[in-house]
Image (cartoon, rainbow, N blue to C red; front, top):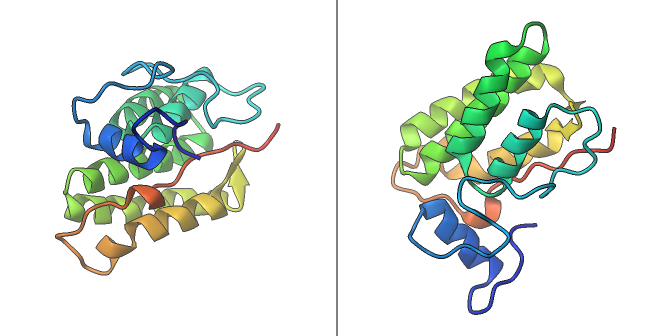
Length: 165
């Protein structure tokens, strides 16, 4: 889980720095704005490349970029999958807000993303939603308890890993 080791910087530190968008050189395998092929995605046969690209951005803590990619896909969809993607978009924006200190916005989006994703439990599109929503709740617990002056704990940020299709 997380980024591979880099000399002088452990994976947790790298993830914190990326999340905070500090001007720090990224490991060679990550180019800012370009997802790492296959990172944390799992078996992907038959999946929309934008879904997978959004997952890669999400797992690199590039939540705004994940939101952008998934929104493009969401806009083209009709039917039941549309609300699933809306839930993923809101989960990404929730974490984006939390990471930027907007705890009120993060709290609001946490609740709405759950509302969109819960009808798809236990799993949908290869994502174990029970695990994902549990991890998201653990990450957001400080703001759910009313904390406004709390920082996101990088160790609790969920990652998305798909089951084989």
